[in-house]
View 1 (cartoon, rainbow, N blue to C red):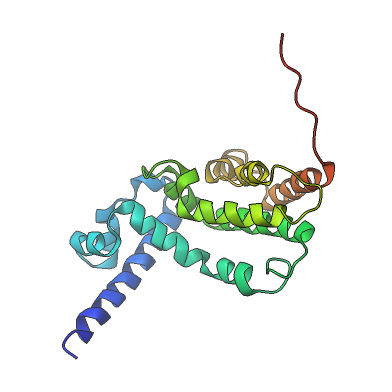
View 2: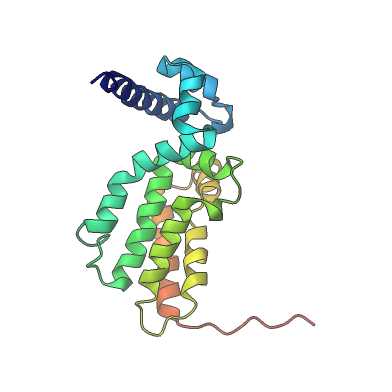
Length: 202
């Protein structure tokens, strides 16, 4: 019983920190300007609490990202079509990519901060590895389609946070237009079959 209160306090502090970080990133035009000190102050906790709970800024970003992503993960792992595992692969691939794009659009600042946060290449991030592995496995189910590993990388590149931020922010491309472009690209990739290698420059 004596340990129960500290655990409750830790859970309450974690929830407060995630809520504060969520709010700060949503309101910030520049994600890198949001510091651990800002988040601690907004959550009403000490900086030491943040570092004990999350390790570093990248750890906090990952925890917040995963918390926001949880409904999508549930839909992908156990939900009905078009995201769930019972969906035919030709339908599931575009649905998965659309879900990633919509998530990035809804969480632009957070996704950008996570991908740009100095934790190494975004391609080595756990969430990227998970999406790539899932997409590759679905692509492998499509008869006649080759290079599933590369195609999964190439299609996910169209949903990178920096590209989404550029298109939605600087170019002000409407959300529905971005989704339509991605759907058309995916349809061409899935329906085109193997393409000839580019000619070698002389």
